[in-house]
Length: 540
Image (cartoon, rainbow, N blue to C red):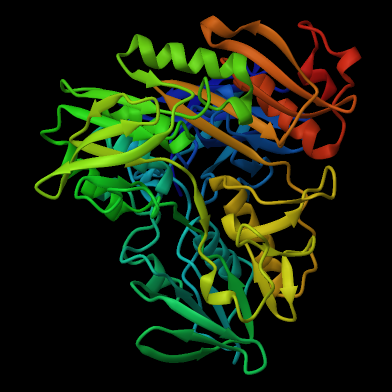
């Protein structure tokens, strides 16, 4: 039996409090909370990126991380929403004689203050137990080794599936944290060892067959087979299609095939960019997308001049609005990034087969040792053209269960699914949504008939400043602001037809937890009921 640590006096932990306490001899912090009179003890940091959970919130029996909204059940630490992959470690705790006593194992889960440099699998969660020997004759196939595919595979095991699980991934690497590529990885804060989502032995332990560098080439719905490049067809009993997207490479642009013209989607792309920019003096980024702007914030260092060429006047104008876009543009300009706005690239000019200049429609010539293509992506669904009638953008239309055909589901960036708030078919390219899709689809492959109802949530980080966004607004009638945009301390509410459909915030992490919860429940106040003094905790 583990020795008990006298952590604190019971009076220091009032009802509803979340407090982290140190343990003796430089031991790990322990998070305590009292809910409905009962004390619970957990690891103090989120097992995703190590966020301090004492800054999170407890809503409806779930502890929600302040950074990326992973959530865990208070009564067990059980993971209920990504982007964390594992349960939150719990510790035995009791009250006696006015003191709170806990038992902490001698080798507690790790935590980190350098999340960008730490693999998600090693931040400190409690992974699922090893899978038992398969006792189910069925084969479940997952096409795609990204956020949706990885989370679906682990959900199948977590939910008790004892059959064969096969993940087919075109990427040469085991599933990794793609969100780090444009941030910490390009900036040199994260190394290759920090990218994998799971430790090397995870897939063997969970009896998940991982076929990397394997491309799906077709689907036969009648035979229930996936065709694979260079391999025999793979039979499935249930199938999840999560192939993700492929970057737009501007094939009609003169000079697009010059050396030094690079996309950023995979780890291989990021490695090529790191090598190309190592001695580059001039980097031009085409497109003010989130990938493009995050890459700009990571690359504008070491004497490099970074120029962003954008069709819009400010970044993110169509997603976040002109005011927030102007704030981000100013933030980048203060760091030395230059902008060519309302501009169009007409040609890439080279010397000796390598890009050297970018020519704009207005006639201006920009020097460029490297050109980064940040002009969006398209669903990687060419191999499904004969099986389904694809949407205009290449996405696959699914129902509220993410189902497209009998025994076939689609998740992640390639799925066009009915948004719960409106019922409108929507395609969303968010990491967390893809993971949530994977979780819901896996459960439905097991017959649970779970509708996908989560409110979308994403984040972006540039120069250490994080914006969080909940909901979805492809258009809006008005944006209501509370706070100061110039100080990156605000909430923004997107109003469509008299209803708030999305919200963005910087410096308001606690409020964004509650707002996201209310959005998901359809319980946000009306625009007329909003004020800077709105008590979000009380509403939630």
